[in-house]
Image 1 (spheres, rainbow, N blue to C red):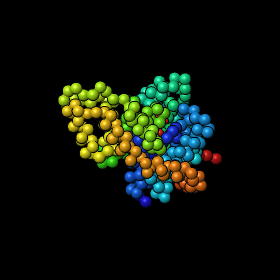
Image 2: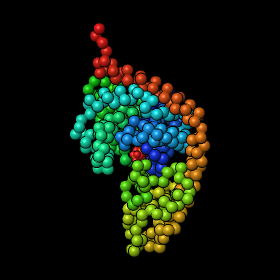
Image 3: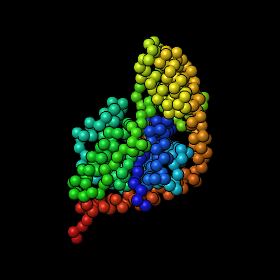
Image 4: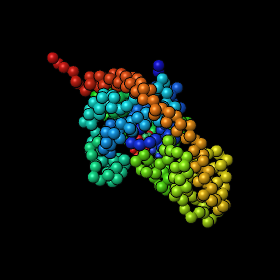
Amino acid sequence: MNKPTVVSGIRPTGYLHLGNYFGAVQNFIRMQDTYNCYFFIADIHSLTTHPTPANLQAGVKQVLAEYLACGIDPEKSTIFIQSDVPEVSELYAFLNMNAYLGELERTTSFKDKARQQPDNVNAGLLTYPVLMAADIIIHKAQFVPVGKDQEQNLEMARKFAGRFNRMYNCELFPIPRPFTFDGGDMIKIPGLDGSGKMGKSDGNAINLVEEPKSIRQKVMRAVTDAGPTEMNSKKSEPVENLFTLLRIVSTPDVVATFEAQHNNCAIRYGDLKKQLAEDIINYTEPIRNRINDILANDDYLAKVAKLGAEKARESAAKTLAEVKELIGFKRLF
Ligand code: ATP
Ligand code: MG
């Protein structure tokens, strides 16, 4: 039982999309046999955007079904819902005492969200990296498989883990590292709107449950440019983004054909998009079918959540007891 520990989570803020899949979930599945894995649904994190209770419940159910449909196996991995493990919130409170306003205000994700939702710049948004650190270190994780967008938040988690160790002169927490296969780069899947990343809350995503008709519509509407006019010219960002998607879902010879066509200015973006849409449909179809089957099985979902909560709480409670002892929460009387 000396497998390295892995933790990662996804906010239940909408349907999982290609970015979540290729940036995170695909790695989760590949890691299940060789690592001690904790994969959770970050329902507390999702409160920063004030979901209604009904939306929150539906979101949690959806992500749980999607995790399972993608192939996360509750026999191999611990799959749990963040709010089922109150120890995480307790550790979050402790870590907050050693997290500083300046460093939290400087994180890119905070600045982005503050810009996107100026009327709702809440303290949870500011301390998001602290809760994320608690999620990770409460299981003493060594690795965190996340997409490129989480790189800086993970850097904060490393900082908070190291700070706790130094403050209490201990080596309680391993310093968690981002995980990619074969030491590759962290992944960023672009949206269909020309720039930036695909995101659940950004209206630019292709979801795993997306129907073929809707996939075709979304891909055909994706932003491109007027087409190359010089041989071997560099691709514009929106076009490069379409190629990024193509590289992920299509075969190498399909990619090579369109690359060559772009290089000799013969490319027709309509053809590229048609091919891309069909390849996305082929890729996602079996996952979509499984999601819909699992969503209809509440008993199974409840069983998985219960089992996961038990396993996650056991691990979390053990770490929290050590943390409290180190902090000095023990009586002299
Ligand atoms: P939201 O818009 O609500 O923040 P999201 O789509 O960004 O949703 P998260 O729940 O924040 O999803 O992130 C879940 C995981 O998916 C993280 O590991 C994150 O790095 C990864 N991820 C999200 N979007 C992408 C993307 N476009 N490319 C690669 N990885 C991604
Ligand atoms: Mg996000």
